[in-house]
Image (cartoon, rainbow, N blue to C red; front, side, top):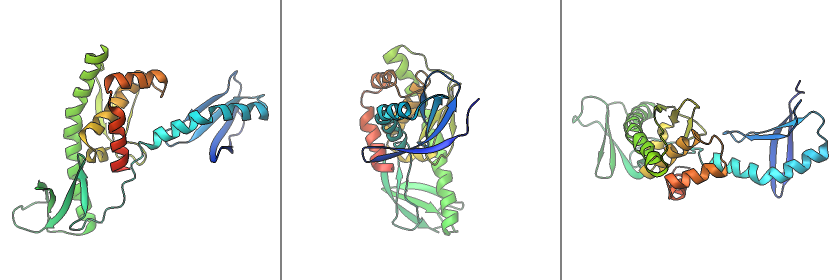
Amino acid sequence: MSKVKEERIFTFGSREITYELIYKDRKSLGIRVYPDCKVQVIAPSQTSESTLAIKLKSKAPWILKQQNEFLSYHPLTPPRRYVNGETHLYLGRQYRLTITTEEEEKEDVVKLKRGRMVIYTSNQTKDHLEVILEKWYRIKAQEWFEKLLPICQEKFSQKHQLAISNCKLSLHKMATRWGSCTPKGKIILNPELIKAPKGSIEYVIIHELCHLIHHNHTKTFYELQDIIMPDWKKWKERLERELV
């Protein structure tokens, strides 16, 4: 039986790592890092404090690397005010917001015109503008993600003779992730990702498709990602630089 969960902190260099410690009847000590950066340590019941400290110190670089990897998926877009002149991203490009009540459109509509993102609406309250734009972004996200998923799948068969098929696409707004996948092949993407360049969107999709083969961020996972998308680091950096 497992003992009561206990939250602890250990120091590695200048960093403090908080972790949840659970003792269980098992032979080896295991460490897990979750997408929200939570660290869980599951140790054999008779593990001594010295053994635990040695193990944690040896695994600290890996823990920090995993946390940094997950943090690269954490969208931290600053709050929007939805006012004229404010910049909004779409496919990696900045657009100046223009809000108008012109009679060109009878219903609420969003259009891109010469570097501007124009919202036609008679209701210019912040809440209403936010709803209009989020709905537009979601529609565009569905269109683009459905177009890019089969293109990314094809790269696996072309470059690694791996058939990645029967994947289902789902959109879900997530506070701390750009994407995720399930063991049954559902690829879940954050609609906010539509604001990133097309190459960055492909990187996230390929990253999740690689997880269907290698579930953790192991050496073989990154080797596969390198084969499928040799320039993935460039697009990952753009994603982090422009949207995080």
